[in-house]
Amino acid sequence: LDVAKVLRQLHNPDVSIVKKAPRRLHIRWYHATTQQLQSTLKACSAPTKAVNLVPEVVNACQVCRYWKKPPPSSKLSVTISLKFNEDVQFDLLFYNSLLEPTKDARPIIHLINTCLRWSATQDCQGKTERLSLEGISTTWICIHGPMKVLTLDQESSMRGKGVDDWAIANGITLHYKAPRQKAWLVERHNEILRQSLHRVETQIQKESLVCSFKQVLAI
Image 1 (cartoon, rainbow, N blue to C red):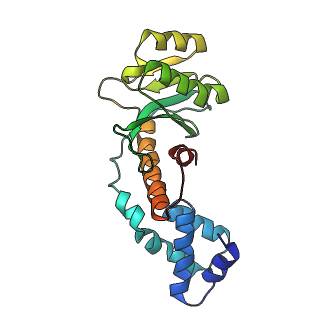
Image 2: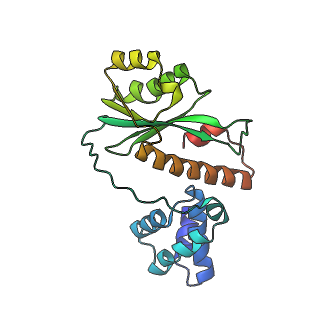
Image 3: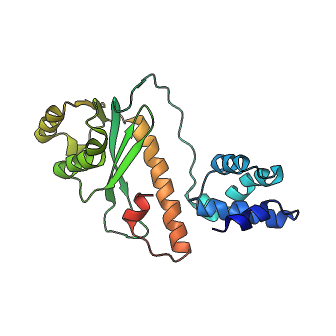
């Protein structure tokens, strides 16, 4: 990305040329949202006319329009977490990769801290108790230490005796949601992750780039 060229385009008197800069930045910054793009342009003292063109540019993006869906319904929650690693939510996100398609959707381990909304992911090779516990240990516990509470839904791979023994050994309290209830925060971020993966993979295909799914997941 030629930053100097982008800055010149932002200050160009021709509106058609000014539009090219936010469009290029939107794509290069992994299809940034309107708010993210406007905040960045304001921080670098971009002209007001360029900042005001961002919603039009983002709404015109074919990749973003393709994966856009109605927002979820609002739900009231009174759970408050004041410390990092005090409460971590876990879920398996099943995703069909556009770059490396498989017969069945691949499970992705998704963990998120309810205090700071810090998340971690790992491409899992299967939906088993051993792989789930290994994924949580390597993705989170080896880096941040054991969480105080692990909140999760009725995931079949996390209901065995081995999971109870693993939790006791690590000093973790398992908080299972009631049947047909979900861990709301990780569920919402599952959709954010899915949309991000779809957009980045679609852009990679559009530009005929060579990239593995694990590289995309690590972005």
